[in-house]
Length: 394
Image 1 (spheres, rainbow, N blue to C red):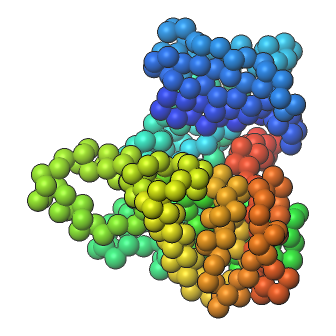
Image 2 (image 1 turned 120 degrees about the vertical axis):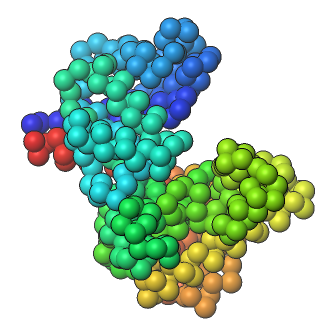
């Protein structure tokens, strides 16, 4: 079937981010925030023209189904004759079996629902978006694109935890996240730096959530996030790698409940917890507080530690790519990470690095053995592309 117009949805607990694609071009983007409370919808065209920017009524904001009805009105305001051909959804966790995007069927939905406890803060809301889209766009094909799918190429050594083997067989594995971003970058390298596209590449997706992945020949070798989105790097409010004995101590000696521990790990840790100032890197970079400086140095150091492990697992490195909101925009973070890595063959060109990556830029020195770049990611475009591939194959 021919697919021209695709709506990409990223549904959270109280929000829905959306982009409308015609062909490969994004023509409309927006967001609904505050579902279940005081909600607001805004949308603008690719040229920046405002389509809608208003508060939603209580009836409109009561759930994802009602909110998608409002989104449908915004799409009609943009183009009264608009026909959406397919809907693509970001789903955070696909478990051990979802290694490719999936056309929505009752069987697929049942399997994703069954593993929702692996991503309790994400998957149920992603699936609510699917239900809402089914009501708003009745009869249109929907495709689920999983953040974890890109990492299913990991071998046993990089995927397994040293628990009894029965746990591995029951799905206790290193799944990784940000797969749409990594897939986009691995494909985009063929356009912007084909000489390294199939070589040994480490991609650092740095945002409020952050992870790193070793990629060779476009396939994931290993990644820093694990069973959940808590593992690996320090993030905005998430702790990253932690001794599990600390969690046992918190529960046994401090009598903290599972919910209390989870709140600390997900909401009070990371850069916010370390700095006691903010989770926003821009605010920390502009602060004169010693705690901000200490937190930023910790952040860079954690990236270096993970980089070393990824390079070892891959047996070398030909390129280091920064992406995500921080990776694309923070010259200070990129410089801090690369400082002292000359032994790996990484040398930064400070002048080239001193800018935001509104497009792909090379920031390594001409003498650097390892190519270093900052490349804007586009997860929504990747979801649209996969949705088109799946639907046109029907």
